[in-house]
Amino acid sequence: MVNLKPPRREVNCIVGIMHALHQFLLFHVLTCLGQNAHGSVIIHGKKAPENSMLYMASVQNSTKKHVCGGFLISENFVLTAAHCDDEIPTSVVLGTHDLTKADDSMRYSITKFKNPFYKGVSYGNDLMLLKLSRNVGLNDRVQTIPLPKEEINMKENVECSVAGWGYTKTNELDQRIVDELRVVDVSIINQNICKKIWGGLPDNVICAGGYETKKGFCQGDSGGPLVYDGVAVGVVSFNYNRNCSYPHFPNVYMDISKYLGWINDTLKKKKYLSKGSSSTQDVAGSQDKVDGYQLVQIKLCCIKRIDLTALIQQVGRPVAIMHGLYKFLLFHVLAFLGRNELGSAIIDGKKAPEKSMLYMASVQNENGQHVCGGFLVNNNFVVTAAHCDVKMEKTKVVLGTHDLRQVEKTVKYIEKLCKHPFYNSKTQENDILLLKVGGKDNWKYKGQPIQLSTSEININEKCSVAGWGCTECNTVGELRVVNVSISNWDVCKREWPGLPTSVICADKGLCKGDLGGPLVCDGTAVGVASFYKNEKCDAPNVYTDISKSLNWINKVLKQNNC
Image (cartoon, rainbow, N blue to C red; front, side, top):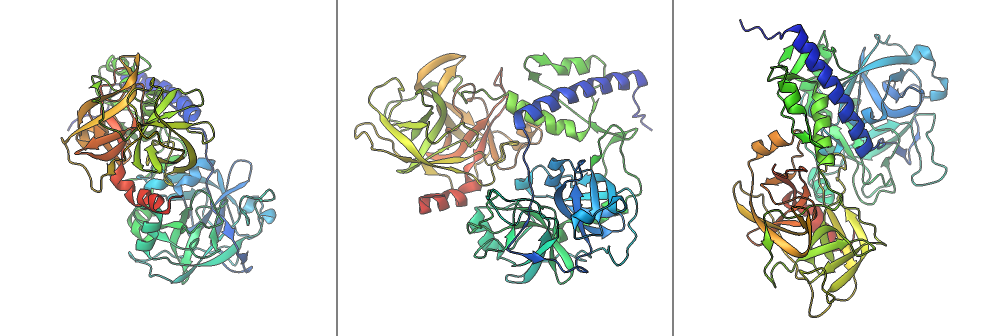
């Protein structure tokens, strides 16, 4: 039998390194990413009847403030949304509709178990189980709610209900959390219609309310249940841009029936691994562990010229002991520290031929400095990256020239910013921004739109990427272009742990000068330059896959608005 237990001295050394790495990564992630509140609440609802919905739970933080909804599914588990963990919940209150009447006997401390595949709201899998510190005594104030017994597909127009505490108004100065539980009826929306309206959706969701109605949820109470015929069928997940005036976008819930296996497995577990971890745990299937710790093979590259790989190798072990959280943090630090303020640039490229690539756009700040690339997709819209620091009143777009130093060119102002509704600033998923531009064209120097790809790209296909910026850190004013090949997805994932699924990877090309520009294959734009690794710029570059967002893009272009 193979002995997987490493010598104690090496374990202590590696754990010490991982602890320091954790602090380093956590500091940069909090600094770079900041915090973002989530939640849902009930709009145009009514006060819930006193003896109804006795399964409802108020998920609260350390100050005993309500941050999310939830619902009791067994005597010691509450189900809620995974993104509620962003609010750092510490307890659950059960047994009252009026939160002003909550006392310590109603409060339960919690251990959190996120769905192991949750990465962000726009990825889906937005579920979290909360194990209570003690069993709940079921009585005339507290009851569980049943879950579906098998996988189901909710039919269109079926009437359900959703309940929660939180705001009853949106975008108003007097909005505040309400103390008493409120409920509203909502109808199921056809899944195909919902996907078309949203321009794509995560897997395993239900759409209900918020479309052709003034009823639904809003900020304040995510994690609450969507209930049909006395059964919890969904968990409140997200709405459109936190706009609760319901701009014809359906509300979205996680479909509980698609996660019954994970939920039942978690409820049945008698022993939970907790060594070296926080109170939030990912409960998955079988995993390799040593003394209760998860084993993760890691490859650390240079972060600001700190070679942590060499440091780990000094202890003589190829496998580092590292909680899954570190992988998550590591990806974001690499992504954010690896991004240069100016965007991306072209390495080992050549000057772009005159009269070619007339779709290329330079997004510039108020001082006329190039900050990001972009590309013209029709006479009114330019595509760039959502992470680019674009301010409508201070940014302009230059078209029709390869040489930014040239006096004659077309300069457009920005009329509207249309950011992808699923853009995630933490993961850079759906890193696409549409700029509606106005102003007259210079008849001699005007842009020509490029077509967008309608299908996914093939591995090893030859493509090109162009941009302004620096080559080996020498600033250039002329457009440069380089040929690139599409990289294997598995290879790219090894370089970028936790990579979003809606991206394309390609070798070399981008570095220090021009993110937002197009990845072009066979004369069509297939990707938007999103991020790269800094310093050597020798890892696969990452582009947002245009085909995955095509429905949303076409909708904006057709409406000439967003």
